[in-house]
Amino acid sequence: MRPSLLLPAILWASSASAVTLSGRVTDTAGSGVHPIRIDVYISSNGTLVNTPDDTTNAQGFYSMQLQAGTYNLVFNPAAGSHLFKKTVNFVNVSTNTTLNVTLPRGHYLSGRVVNASGVGVFNVDLDFLDPATGDPAVNVQGDHTDVNGYYTAIVDSAVWNVPFMPPAASKLVPQELVSVDLRSDQNAGTLVVPPGFYVHGTVTDAGFFPIADADLDARVAGTRPKLYTPGDNTDAGGSYTLLLPAGTYDISAAPPPGEPYADATARSIAVSADVTAPNLVLPPGLQLRARCKDPGGIAVAQVDMQVDSLPRKVRLETENHFSDSGGNIQTLVSAWKFRVRLLPPVSTKLLPVQYDSLQISAARDLGDVTLARGHWVSGHVVESGTGVPIAGANLDFFHRSTGTLAITEGDLTDASGFFQVVTDGDLYRLRVAPPSTSYDTLFVDPFGSLNDTTVTLTMHRHSTPVLDPAPSSRLRLAAPWPNPAHGEVVLGFSAPPGKAELTIVDLAGRRVATLFDGAVAGPHEARWNGRAVDGRPLPSGVYLVRLAAGGEVKTRRLVLLE
Image (cartoon, rainbow, N blue to C red):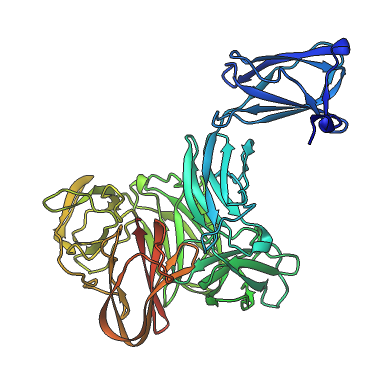
């Protein structure tokens, strides 16, 4: 194409009637920014104006000649500068004009979004939400994937929850990265968005009157973490639609704030195609109240009220189950018999309170609940001989006088092998269950402490995988070994006579591998090489080992390293 054919699309300023537009571009610290390319458009029709002097100098200053008029200006920082692009519209340049601009700084999140076949997904929308408030970031740019699924977004420097929302027509399941620290640049790697199926359902009261704005949650059957399900509230007709990957789920509904209903859960909903779930009937809610205080009568905040239905001890998904600054907890439950626990934060050094069999037939006020003082037992669990910390070890404190298990929050070791629990001056039989079958279970008997105590507990290596020596049911699933795993993983399990299925699912609930599906009686051992059912290596991350037999389900967490 000849250059003259471009003349109608780009205008040049006439020197005879030109005026000067000048200024300085700085960052939020007041430093001049170079280079910044400035694009100038006529506001009325969007025509790009040719401006030869359209780049800032080393001190951030610019000066250009324009015809008198009104313009939209776009200030474009260099790639990788950590500066946001800025647009200033309707700038009136009728005389010599000064326009100074400040460009905020941010950090980059980059990566790629692919489908289950490894193909990049176009036009996935990234949101950046405050983890505490849910408020969106003020400054975000580059928050959509390109045709190959790549993105490089710049956002205000902070910690964000980052939902990834594929186009609705793709029927790909939204994902969320939680607490991404973007106070420095991060590469999130490759995110796989699995195909999904629609789960349709309704929520009503006992008279089948629809309940609007009920909140739906989905969990992999038998586990506690919630899946990310945006747009999961019922409409005016009580209907909802969730997009979930293939798997088996527990789906719970909570009433809208202020409505007098208890939660309800439909369990073990199999999803392998679009499906309609059973109607969830929210029973009348009966208030269960308590006021938590310490022995000095001071209110205790953030006490967690956990409610388990009896006799199977199935956890209710109750709302508002943490005490406020006045120590008050007020939640809604149905008419039933429950085990209720009040668990204060470990930092308070207060002991939990448990009601073993609480029959609820009307509103129930537990009154002022005094949480007795205890003390900390802190320490590390390490490998004998090497001192290597052992993460994921579980400490159980059994009262020697009664054999009952004490309630001890914080009794799972972290990545450094550290634990901290609150206990009293009683004598215990301490059992330390290893995170994998590479270690023997450790017993300390007796174990006692009268004041804050720090201990180091050492575990010995075991040569072969073993099952928990004190299983709580006939269905038993040993901790994966090794864990974290790089290469082959050994999975020991046992089940009563009948059919059993051992699978691997990701945190979105999608089945990625089946390790055993058949008749079983007694102990078995399976091995997994970290590959999906189609033979491809799975990305690093957290997965769930799921054993199902006889209507019962056991799960274990497994960290896979590429």
